[in-house]
Length: 196
Image 1 (tube, rainbow, N blue to C red):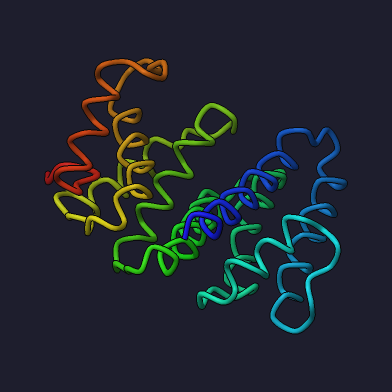
Image 2: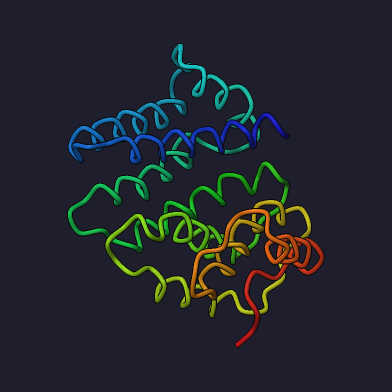
């Protein structure tokens, strides 16, 4: 399972890097489109000689995740290169990431997409001109009190940390006691955001 999850997370990191290093949005859009098309082709053709695509074909596709499912992650990043950023699209990219990893963990949950959207909004907070906090708080209300199953908690932990960050006035550095406690409490409870 680990090589499969790592392959999906490596893909996500690659797409994030495309956006991070892009100075010309059109060039970034073209690069992201190449990845989207290459991922979709994995459902019909052998993987090209690209290590990240080969790893997805070898470890992820045999476990029921399709190239089309992986390609949906790209749209969330593509939205970040638009002149007017659509936060719903950004969130759907995060949802697609979580929904692609869930089959690898052997579990699913109807709230998983919302957790993925929240985690993605947490990642782009401060990187986009729009205030993402209202959208994040709406997702937190929808997730309020929901418990994720134990197999999903290593993934939904990212949403728990994003929720914690959105409740704070100032950013919190990594590896603080508060973050460690949030991680431990999520591991035990499976709750991303408290019930309102």
